[in-house]
Image (cartoon, rainbow, N blue to C red; front, side):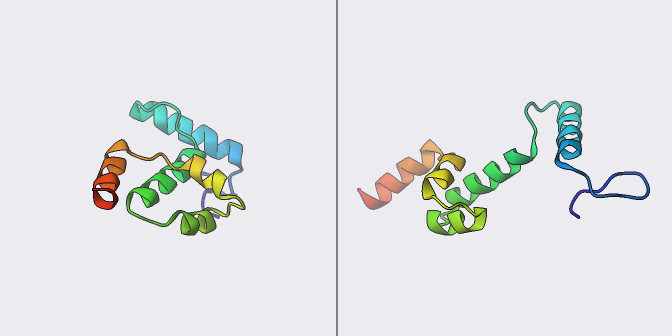
Amino acid sequence: ALFVSLQSPYNRMNIGGIEVRLRQLGKRLGLNKVHPHKFRRTLATMAIDKGMPIEQLQQLLGHRRIDTTLQYAMVKQSNVKIAHRKYIG
């Protein structure tokens, strides 16, 4: 298991327990809206920023439809400008 309880017998944590722990950690660090899904979105955004083809990201995330993958990744405006200069001139 990726996440286990902090006390013996160290059982697998359920999603609710993970969400609570991440929220607590976020508060201690002064961060808002920390949740497991944010890591998935961050992975998608970073992969796109580094040039990973959207079709490969779709497979990695296990999405049936590419539209779902496109909703996950946040595209940086600076990367759009760089791509525009590279491909359009």
